Length: 246
Image 1: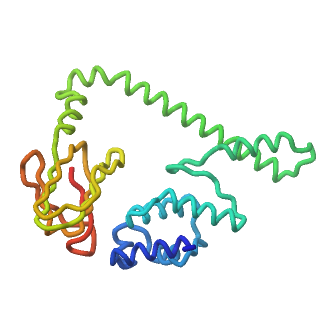
Image 2: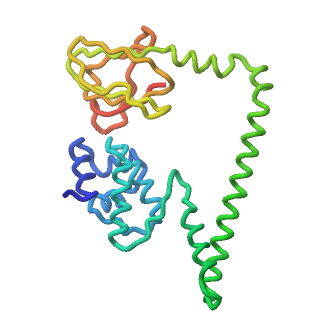
């Protein structure tokens, strides 16, 4: 079975991308990427940051980020290291609650270090609750004021969304090529396949899109019937790569 590093290295080489190019695009240090591909995650960073870098790198290589993060968590578990559950930059406080329950059930003769750790966890959990309450209050205030603001602003938000939804993106292949279109708003893949020479594909566009093309010279774009010039690709390869369209 391939290791995490072997899968990353294989995907990068398959795209013809160097470590330096990957580092420049993802903004992740090249030595970190080299360690990842060597299946070595023993770097001076918390697991939270390593998971974030893995997500960015696998997304750049068009792999499944969740699968690689799960493999990394399994690797931590096999090495006897705690794999705290973390999601989108937030620490799961399930462990904090369990630690507090354990400390309450511990004998009265616990050490001073254990008591200090219990207090630390308690403060952390309490601070998280306070921050959550503040965020909820701010959201309520903002939404309570939104009707008055929307009455003074034209057009209203609903009109803007409807205008974006009415846009139609048309892909036309001057020669056979492959195209993948992903909607940034919710990550939905709107199209992923091959277009034959002269074939066209129309897609309803909502917000910005991420388009990956096998050969940019073989693709023409139109938005609501108007020609759209393909911007420079975010890749070292001139013709293969991806670009954003608003």
